[in-house]
Image (cartoon, rainbow, N blue to C red; front, side, top):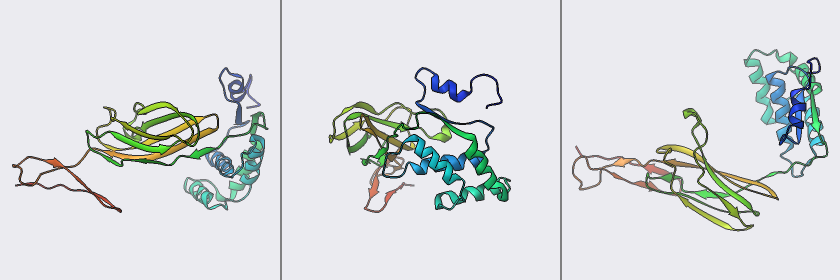
Length: 243
């Protein structure tokens, strides 16, 4: 904030040891709608085929944020702002205010790398004693990292890593690793990434752990057995029992 004494937060971040290479920050108090619209335009600018310079990306995002929310991905923002109490007629003025309030601190010629999609396959359903299995091919050399995202509804951070190791370009990987003790049941997302000098490749897979208990044919009452029936379209779990 230009009106506040001392160095601003963005400047302190930029000059801090191991701080960011560049900072986009506002000189005044900002509002949720204006922030979201400008941030969305920045992200959409990264979806092109080229690797834009940071200054061009930022300038283009500010220019587009002044227009009405015509892209399909952004139309819901105006409606949501209205539902939350914003004056729809004033949204254009808010976009204008935020476009002039935000500035770039850093080298505008800094080129931004792109994240590459990493195609992976993983076993989608695990019994309690079945290891996690992930297959894929590294698009370039770097560090392979596989981790499990913990359910957000249960709080806490990520569960321990499944694996982390070096990998060569074009190398096929097959990870078979026991699931962490903290994950006994439910669905989790596997995040698989390869990071190297050529950039970052990321893939995601959803895995469910914990088989359904069923009674086996010919077993005594109360005896149970796990099984899953899979076809090309659906995976169906069954439960049967003896009275």
